[in-house]
Image 1 (tube, rainbow, N blue to C red):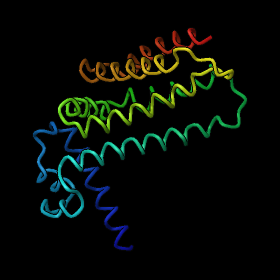
Image 2: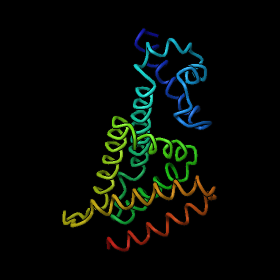
Image 3: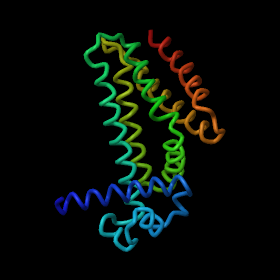
Length: 197
């Protein structure tokens, strides 16, 4: 394994360590030492891989975004050769959102924390905004009719993502069961599909 591969592997281990730390306690209470211990790396060595704790968080946000984008692209391959209606494609997209994002309580717990951090840290805010803007843009692309006419599709896509995130927050805060979260999302998404017809 080359030097660059070892460095990338260590960076990945540190990002995974931050994930595990954030499942146990807030970012503000998580120290560089905690992250290093969780990663099995001397905390003094973390500065070789990242400039700061915030740099670790920013790279973590990027890695989550990249991971879920890749997972989504892979999931879309299941339907790419099928002759599906826009409704069927959107149902598939919504199902992905529901099963891989909204009902993943660990992911939702992490993002509740990240949203709180983003309010006070401009660099985190910019990264979160970029990630969600890309997701909204991609979702809007699936929602637009084939004739290109789409008056308020971008706003509707933003509303869908906002609702999804709100339900994710509620699922964590109120300890909703997965089936209840799914039912709530599916009922809302059915209304969106009806609006688009």
